[in-house]
Image 1 (cartoon, rainbow, N blue to C red):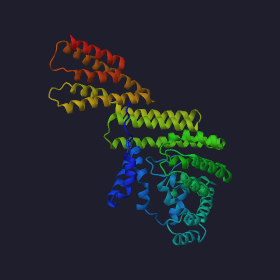
Image 2 (cartoon, rainbow, N blue to C red; image 1 turned 135 degrees about the horizontal axis):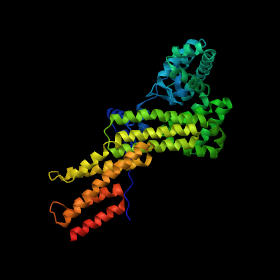
Image 3 (cartoon, helix red, strand yellow; image 1 turned 90 degrees about the horizontal axis):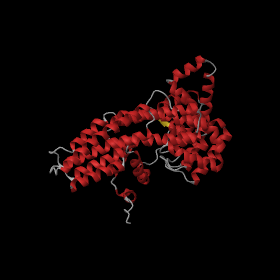
Image 4 (cartoon, rainbow, N blue to C red; image 1 turned 30 degrees about the horizontal axis):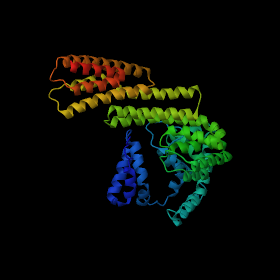
Length: 457
């Protein structure tokens, strides 16, 4: 049996990436970065961007870092722009950079920042070793200063309140400990980053696994309470958290099982917390896009699948499981809002459009595709919906659509038996196709046979 030739389009793009004129290349990268923010286009955009990286590294030569930018290097993977007022576990709001840097700069030992600035001025922007050497004293001093400020504030409720207000709010205050710890373990974190594939990571080979094991062991020797931050950095660099399960298995086989178990509770909290925040992003993305309903259902299904796989990887107790179920239930409600509600009316309207005598062949095909899209979307949502009300509504919708198709099938058979000139085998097979999607192949085959017998008679 012949098979389709493999798709070589991305390979062809990789071979011609340096032939694209600079202005068009910049526009292309910008467009792809924008597409990465859209729910249904992220995977495709990532695949294309991966082939553009050789040119991107030349098109964007490394900038000479400032002391503040170098200060952020150990925790830059965790930076994000939250969609809520709270801070997700394992992430650091970008808005925290300014206040935390200002706190450090105010209390740093004389000459530290100036010395870093001088070292950076003499280092070439692409001289990684020189830049990391310049960062060493800065990160050590940063960890010392921020730890001391945090400890002093914890001595009294009033001190904690004052520090929170000075930093600009609870999310920044909560980020202070994260920044402090990552500055303290900066060397092993940066060594790990250098050994891992560029983000977004879709898989990690043996060398990457070995680097992760080494980072976990090195950080544990420095500060065992900091071990979860190795996992946080890994999570931030993954394409989706569903990859965690496979990675944790490999890390356990490589001898890091005990350290993973020790970090499991905080890793689980990060998975749930980030998934809860992800809901906000999903809602915003769907609000901005007019997507086929089946595409929305597939995207939501991938979110649920990734959540399930990452939750299994980190384990957790009943409270953790309840929060995971709440997130899944909320994703089910998103499906209800964007896919299920109004699906019966829209589907039956599209099916009725198949009988419009004024419709062109293209319009008839559009109506068929619209009905198929709605039905497929409902079936997909039924597989992952964690919300009982959504599941009930999906079941009711499929029954109503099935009843409508039953009535249509009976009418077609009757008209075929009467040799109605306005009914054709195309009408029969369109209906058979939709019946198969709703009620399965057995019922669809019965309708097909009945239709064929009616035409013979």
